[in-house]
Length: 494
View 1 (tube, helix red, strand yellow):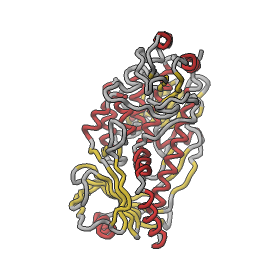
View 2 (cartoon, helix red, strand yellow; view 1 turned 90 degrees about the horizontal axis):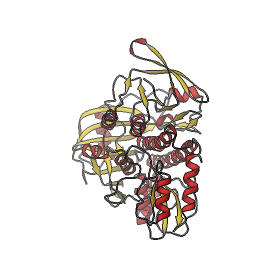
View 3 (cartoon, rainbow, N blue to C red; view 1 turned 180 degrees about the vertical axis):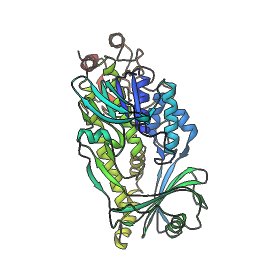
View 4 (cartoon, rainbow, N blue to C red; view 1 turned 90 degrees about the vertical axis):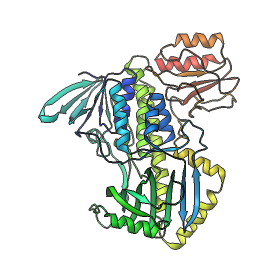
């Protein structure tokens, strides 16, 4: 089997990558060492921006149907509510966090991939690869020991925190392992107060406790259990330990039973400097790992895949030049990874803060800060990943000409009833502008890069060029079609 792209790793990131490439008509192979998908819940939250992009891919409805919608998050300290962040006012088709075990996310993504004619090749291990100027030669070992040498135009490492691809490239995974032990339990809980569709965090003098609803009566419990004293992994907790933590730190009268998964872990905060080395790319945990605070890890990785796939598809199909498209991937996503690392690290530091005076100051400060509506809105948009943008990307042309509406680099509003930009089988840009003959002529001239129909503008006198992933590439004044023409000509390599 031939492929333009070899994807290594069939977790959520690799499956998203392969599905997006297949949707856009790029021959792709995806391999994974594991014999089957994970059966663990692992990453739980699919955030609003990821759901928007899954809608664009044509499979978002299946995720929503399978998950539990959560519309708020609260922080409690000393039995009082320090903060409440509502998600139901988010300006998106998905104003909630979707709780969905990773095992289900992978099942749905693989089902979507199969519908596009691609199957995961399991028990297939990447042994080595050698990139050169126009291809990557890779050696795979399949079940039973058979080895295969293949050539692909591009290789993408989506193979997790212990990435074979990253190690082979010699890239440094810069960062630290935090010296705090944590426990995790997926269990059934009875007696949880408050709303069943909300996340709850408890700041206690002993440490943090978080409750994430997964399904009616089923929750994820996470708690820190003190400083790590050696390099050995802490034994997995027993149900009795989880119950004792709930009794001590929780609101009281919560009963845990029927554990599904009990584990211990330490938090890694690491990232590579560059997500690309010539014809080889990294995405997801292969490029960045961070605290689970905020539940951003899997979403950030999936959005790495959405970002790269449309660019690579245009290049593979001969519709665009390699640069600046492919060079923009690392620039854009590395900065997003840096921001996610920083935000998750701050949340973790606040949650595990020790000392009575320090905790009292934290609690009062948080109550004051989150009492401001603008802060709550910013927090909600950050959690939902709707605030992600690319203002400093080489694909973003600065200058707004004074129009209201989204600025260059920002996510374009998703209008009710409108088809998502980037849907379909070709990754096309979209024009939002008043109709005039020059605009129609431009759309016809760049029919391979532009949607044929111009969409209504976000304000009366502006022109917005929106990328296939829904971010604004440029904003121009009414009639300034030459700016759009220059941008598209450069993209096409003209």
